[in-house]
Amino acid sequence: MLVKTVTLLALVAAAIVCALCGGFSGLGWIWMLPVFFGLAWLVGAALSLLWLWLLCRRVDLTKEQEEDDPFYRKWMYIYIEALINLLQVRTKTVGLEKTPRDGRFLLVCNHLFIADPGIIHHYFRDSQLAFISKKENENLPAVAHFMHRTLCQSIDREDDRQALQVILKCIRIIKDDKASVCVFPEGATSKDGRLHHFRPGVFKIAQKANVPIVVCTLRNTKPILHNGFRLKHTDVELRLLEVIPAADLKGRTAVDISEQVHKIMADDLGPDLVAEE
Image (cartoon, rainbow, N blue to C red):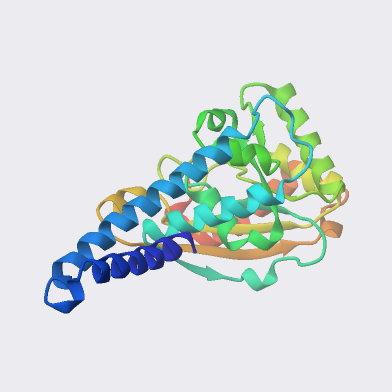
């Protein structure tokens, strides 16, 4: 929406300036219109970045966020959509109609690239997701600010006590009906593009909050930035494979649930995209 709006306004502004300069009375519009359009588009893009900067300036990262902020969530979706359009990401989705509409859930997915949360946010925007993210993402400009406002939780993978506190916080977020939670159970971005071993502790979130697990897979997100800078499109696939009911999680160990989810993902991705561990 943002890219389309900026483009439309730039075209209108270019046409007006061109008309005021008398460009339409002759052949001058042939060069004037694209030049003025390009200038107007750059001004619109600059204003969009200025608004993004102002939004981030209003966020105090040192203050704990207790509620999801619908204003920031809306603008986060707008900027994500703009990036998807600018980077020419074409996503094929499968099975999203199985997304639970009543009540919260835990969404789990394989993790290939930094763009994965954006893709998931874009196609699950009605689900109001809060991500569990590695602590290093707190240093990402703009990203950290929107994460903070939308109840994302930073986890220190080297600190088991802090990781437990994050899991308990996510359980409370779901139980208090503030958001659903999304986590990448591999615990890190896959360096070779294959599915790796899971950290089973995150599945306690679904068990303790008594919510279903939504199992998804992503394909081909790694080349998004590379292709985008080369003005090439990237075909991505997002698949919702299965929704494991909350009742099926009772009385089981986190390791058992982890193995079940890993098998569901592995069967979908195929042996070439699953690491031997």
